Image (cartoon, rainbow over the protein chains, first blue to last red):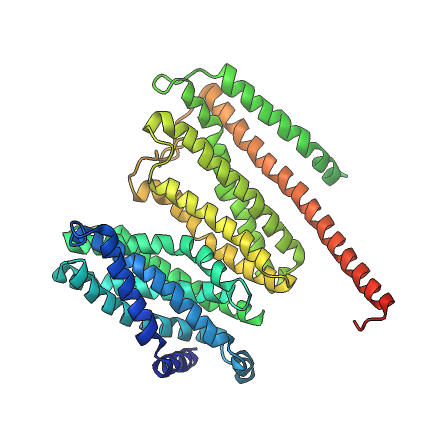
Length: 219
Length: 241
């Protein structure tokens, strides 16, 4: 399973490196969205760091939707599905690999957006660094959930509209927990419950994915 | 014989219990010392929420899990999950509505960003998402598998809703009927009315589920007959099938 996961993750990341969709499309889109959030707040409030974590995760949400669509598009390209079936790859490994690749892409994007948030929204640098572990875990959980929901909605004509509809309520607890732990890091609080939610969600989504991704692939 | 009798009695018994709840809740039980007449909503809101979160969503989740398990996989499980989820949407809407009616005079607002309210609303959207996912897939097997996985994923939200009042001390009150050490907080006629309400709404769920299931079976047979008829018509026209 681990070998398959590494193989699939390397394949997805290699495709990403060659196509450079993340670099030239997703990251600029995220930065643009961050700037627009600052504009929406206005010059008087854009530098208010208390809004930073919420806006950061709002942009992350938009980026995740784009990246999940992209990750599933790779899987739906002609010949991929039959190749995976012919090779007899372990579905749990495929799920873990795709989640890992998506997580790596999200971590890169998340880091760039965090730097953008420090620059544009004046989020405190020290607080942002303290929040980094919680951001890494939250983005990992979002990657696991996104891979599962992407597989659920993939392949049909309605993927583009169905994916946000199904994922937004599922992502909401993760985003809230991520935002609260980020704010907590900025203001020196100790809300351990938010951390627990993110870690439990990460384990739950990975567990369900390992068990049920094969069922979705069969179909 | 017993099964048939139970099915026949399900509707009338449900109606009697709900009528009894209305009578006891509105006329027999006393108003609350602090909340006055508003407290009568306690005979509706918790029972409706119980059905929405645990009975109907639980039925949909168990039926979905049974569909995914190869030994019990059948379209019956898929149909049960689908019908239970539809009924669940109705009960979640009723839960939020009755909660809002109580919230306006008590909290001063129709809606508050309370942990339990928000997580219940999220569950409602997830249930609607389940129905949307079903409509997006035409192939019955694909639809059944995808929606079964989605139902299990959506069920992760149920324990979050259950424990939300303990994890986050927001506006919504904690346990109403039992304390943490299982001591009953409601007594006498109020406890009986609440019990009748819980049983009545639970039976209402099964009544609705049964009716919706029968409708779904008929809809499927009509759809398959229409398909066969269309194919025969094409054959008669001499077109390649």
